[in-house]
Amino acid sequence: MTAKALWNLDESKLVGYPRNDDEPVAGLDTNRYATVSLVREPEPTYNPIEEYLVLTTAIDLDALTYTYGWSVETLPPPGPDYQGFYSALLISACYQAVLAEVLSTTSPAPAGALAVFVSAMQDCLSGRANPAAMQGAIWLLLGQLNLDMVHVVELQAMLVDAHLDQLYSLTPQATITETGTAETIISVES
Image (cartoon, one colour):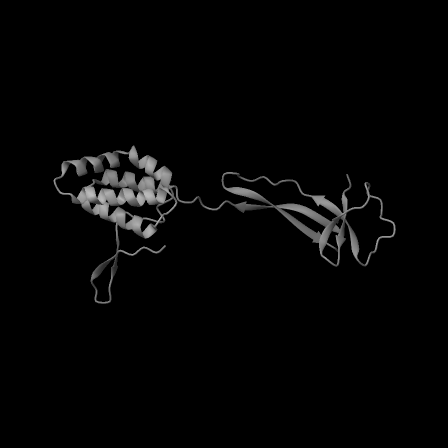
């Protein structure tokens, strides 16, 4: 296998070397082609949990080399894991507390809020996530319940583990208006 190639100067692209050895090409049009040595850099060390390798190429016409190198890139952050969140939620003490409260009350409001939440969750699971609707369903459900801080912390941990904590919050955000009163923001940016 040859360690040489031709660089097409007109089209700026690499062309296979026409010989099976590294000897010069007789009659080569040097106005159109440059003979370059192929350089293959070894793979660098990287952390496959946080990074990945991208093959790079570079031509150096002064040194007459074409280098195959590597770039270490950071993996993108993981996307939302609705399935993981819902699976964890269903077996959690938090969800058992929600069900116990819904079943023990005579008011239909908690059961209705749970139905809205489950419907929004099903949309997320089927690839039709609507962050504004899901956020509203979370706030509606939590507003109808009296969860203790242990269950709220558990719920927040599940959001973090499923990479949903940047999309959803467990409490509505309050802002101060120009008149100095607190106002709850219900809209969610998508």
